[in-house]
Image (spheres, rainbow, N blue to C red):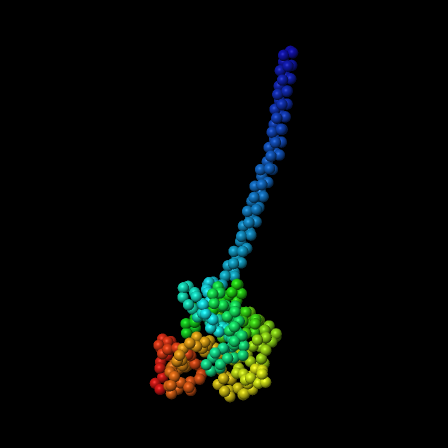
Amino acid sequence: MKGKYLQLILLLFISAFTILSGCTSGNVTEKSQPKKTIPAVQDEQKKENETETIKEPISSIESDNKKLLPATIVKNIDGDTVEIGLNGKVEKIRMLCVDTPETHHPRLGVQPFGPEASNYTKKILSVGTKVEIEPGIGGGRDKYGRLLAYIYINGKMFNEMLLEQGLARVAYIYAPNTKYVDEFYTIQKEAQKKGIGIWSIENYAQEDGYHSTTAQGGREKISSSPSGSTPENNFQNNPNDDQEANLDCKGKIKGNANSHIYHVPGGSYYSSTVDNIVWFCTEKEAQDAGYRKSKR
């Protein structure tokens, strides 16, 4: 009897020990489990945050992509024309949708604020300056082979900088190159309100170009001659009439853009050809451009 009693006590003791061990083991597991899972959750959240952070800049870069081409300024021609080194060769750039006054035009001479525009371009786009080029749509060239483009320096468009300084007007807006027209006109209006640069002379910069001036009393004043009284008053500056590229020519060849006939110095019609002029350094250059020589 006594033996059975002792066995019963022993079984109860073993059962109690087993229960206590199980509880202890369960508590340890329960307490240690959070230590393993919390970092895992935090790591997962961190990855999600990093993914979101990466996505935003990529989207922004794609929306701002202008397909810019790296280039270097190699020569300054005038306010709105430069030469650049691009893809291993020299390209002449005519800035899109802006027009600065002339500096050495063979017929108009030096126009007010032409030198200022030219000097500003030389200062900002000095030879050796690294720039980026955004060519115009549709091949980006005019019929003379000049690359029509927007120029960027340190992320800022130089075409807009000329307008901000009052050194250029918005001009020659032809589809499809109308991408920045609204911004250009907004900038121009601000310069007009300030009355700076070309806008400081009343009626000087107009829709049809820069009107001729005469010096009077030490100040530049717009000629009061009636419209159409002289060829100069009706002259409309345009990219086809930029002559600075031919300044180094010893004998200039004068072409008529309408008839595509060119005249050499001494020819019968050389002096009388005054409208729609395109200049060439050599007869071969004129012929390569599709012009034929005048018979007289």
